[in-house]
Length: 108
Image (cartoon, rainbow, N blue to C red; front, top):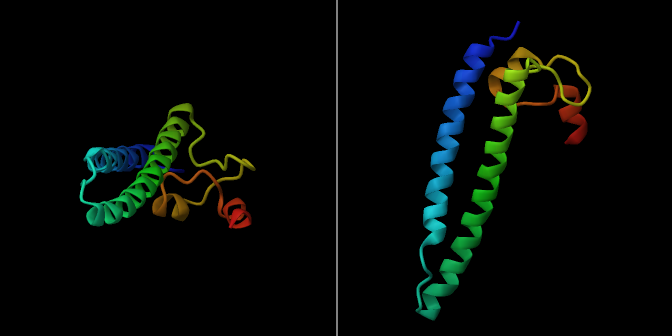
């Protein structure tokens, strides 16, 4: 039996950390670029990297929220693809996991 109370606590902490990281990235991205052309090229590269990081964080936030939704609707721990039980070790390592190891391996 999966301890959903513990999983919910971990996911809520994870969500708070991700949202803080997202806010920090948004703040960094909101800073105006330097008008000096030599600095501007470097800042454009940095901004592209920050945007990529922001996209990854947004995806992690979405996965975490979906996991919290699965806890709320009682389907947490079930593979969203095949319906099999997701192993406790997998959920311990990745509490936001939506796929059993078999389905996740097929996607890799």
